[in-house]
Image (cartoon, rainbow, N blue to C red; front, side, top):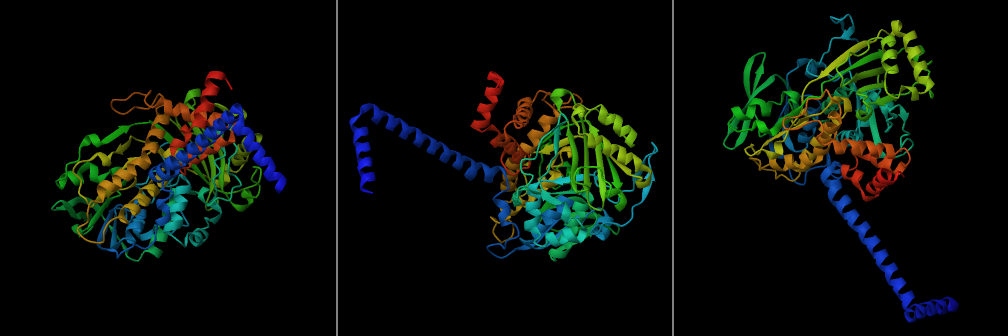
Length: 564
C-alpha cells in the first residue's frame, strides 16, 4: 500500500513539474469532459425529450391505472365500433362513468366477438373464389395484420387477461419477438433481435378479423360500463361552445344520444371533418386535409391447411406461425411490387401480392410463380421458396383458397392540430385523423398510439363537467407522434411513378427521407448496430430521429464520399 502511494505521489509530482505532461493531462481531461457532456446531452435530448414526445414508451405505462381522482361524471360517445373506436372506448371506460359505442353494422355488435366456424363464399365476375365479408366497411378484413410492438404493449396494458384470451382464440403461438424475415432486393436480412427476450419487441401476426374479434371480446368481458348501439351517426348537436350529443339513424328512425365527450372513430368516412362539425356550427377548414393517391392494389389469397398438409410443410423448421417470406419493394431499383407469405391463426396461410403499378394480382400458384420470377432480386431467394410454391400447387385443389382483393384509394391526413374552432370535448381517432397505406401494416398500431395519447390527455383532465379543453392538447400531442408515420410512408409511396402527389407537391418531395432510410438499411448489412436502430424505428419503439444520430450520419458520409 505504501509503495503504491509513493508511485502515485511521484507520478503527480512528475506531471506538475513537466509542462508537456501537464498539457497532455489537461487535453485528456478536456476530452473526457467533452465526451461525458456529449453523452449527457444526448441522454437528455433523446431519452427525456424525444422518446416521450415522439413515442408512447412512457405514456403506455399508465394505461388502465386508476385515475388520481374520481371518474368524470359523464358519458363518452364513440362514433364507430371498429378497432380504433373500440380501443377508444376501453380507454374512456377508465375515465368516464359510462361509454356508448355507435356502430353501423349490426353483425359486429351481435356476432363480432367470436370467429365464425363457417364462411360463405361467392364467385367474382372474373371467376375467382371470394368470401362474403361480414364486415362490409372493412376492406382488408381477411388480410394479415403484423401488429408492431406498440400494439402489444397497449393491448397488454388495457387487457390484463390478454394471454388467456389469446389462448382462448388459439392465437397464443402467434405472439413472438419481432421476426420481419425481410428480403430487400431478394437479399435476406437477419432479424437483429430474433432470440431476444425483450417484452418491448413482442408482436402479433394475425388477420384483421382476428384482431378485431380479440379486441371486441376483451372489451365486452372487461368493461361493463361500455354499451353498444347499432346505427349510423348522422350529425353532432351543439350546446354552447361544446358538443352536447349526436343524432343517430336506426331501423326505428332517427334518435338523439346525449354526450359529454364525442370521439370520431368513423374511419375513412371522417364524419367530423366532412360534415358533422360544420353542420353543428364549428367551422372546419377543408385545407386541414392533405391527400395523395398511391394507386395501389393488392390481393390476399387465404389458404386453410389441414393437419396432414401442415405436417409436410417444406420450409426449414416446419410449419410455424409468423412471417415465412417477405419481399419488399425498392423504388430505386424500379421494383414496385410486393410478395409475402404469412402463417396466421386457425391454420391459415396468407399469400399477399400487389404493388403500385396497377397490375393484376395472381390468382393461382401457376400465376404466382410467374409473378415471383419477374420480381427484382428473385434470384436471391432460397431453394425452399420455390419448393414451397410447388408444394402449395400440389394441394391447391384440396385447400381451395379464396381471394380478398383491395384497391387502395386516396390517403390523407386531417391536421386537426391546426384547427382553430373545435369544440373542447371532441377528438378523432384512427383513420378519422390519418388514413395510412395499408400495405405497411401500421393502421392498428397507429390507433394504439392515438388511444394511449388520449389516455395521457384525459389523466390531466379534471373530473368535472363541462369538460375543459381536451381537443387541443390531444391533437397537438398526437400529431408529434404520427407525423413520422405520414412523412415516412408518403416518401416511400412517392418513389413510385404511378403515385398522384398531394396538391402543391411533386414526387421529389421528401425524397431525401426515402433515400436516407434505404441507405441505413443497406449499411445495416454490414453494421448490425445500424440495422438494430433501423429495426427499432421501424417497429415504432424508438424515435425516428435515431436514424440521424451522429454515428449513423458519419458512417453515411464515409460510405458516400470515401466508399468505406
